[in-house]
Length: 398
Image (cartoon, rainbow, N blue to C red):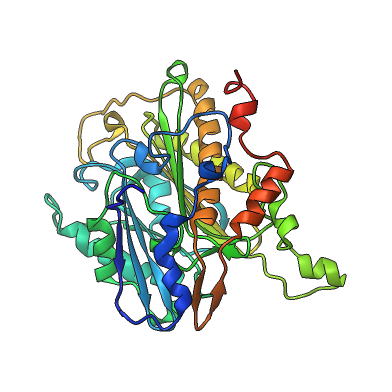
């Protein structure tokens, strides 16, 4: 496996009291979707099949595993070079279902810009993470005394993590930011995904990308997800959740009466592209990520916080914060958007599968999240002919 510089693991305690948490060190031994022949869509991924295939995007993780009940972390996405405050990046935040604590949302939706890195963490960690991000940002060159709009998203990892202990602070945030790199991105039970789930199995961080052919502009779209949601897992159309016996409202269906089935959770989706898009076009792009989510079997239930943060890294569409003269920026027209929509749907779906497949079992005194069984999953995918479509369907078919 390639050396992944974008992961910093903070082992605060050398003696992990629960052997299950030791499995978090073995994410690299588990496959990604394409490693088992699970090919999504028709467009090709970038060289890394990650959000970092989009030029200028950097990702870093800090994972905190401590004692009996701390299983959490931070993931940082830096959306461009230089000073993000003086030259913010065009952006939009789409709310699929708004049961969440996303810090900084309203200003992005008002101005259509992001002026700090993006952090993902646990639900009750967002405010301490935002404060640490604020301090780190003010230390960067060219910063003065002014207000700041930190962007921090979250999902609830309390099934295995004691988020009431305020487990994420300046140390973890700085580690994630300072380790951020343009290379391969660690996935699974790392960073903000250390304690999260998906469809009742262990989830975590996942990423994927798509590169459009030159005839369609040649642009790249990358997606990174922090999964923590429910539903009925479907992979390339195969009913994996049903076959594994873990699906939405199973107990209620079996009992023919109301039960305590819980299908809630959340997902943070970050979409990056090098296409020259303004905030309005990025809003349209962000909405398509929800379609990729739906293809995996999610239905955005009542208690779900489903958010999409989309931004463009194209340097010509970054406008200076202060200018008394009109600023002209090149932007794609509406007729050029459809291929980017398709790329976003495909990359989002595959990023979610990567998060699930790469994740390892995590246990704490609060509970246990099992990794999805690989052999059974592959067997189900074979049963429904859901593997290696690139070899049997155009354009891959000879």
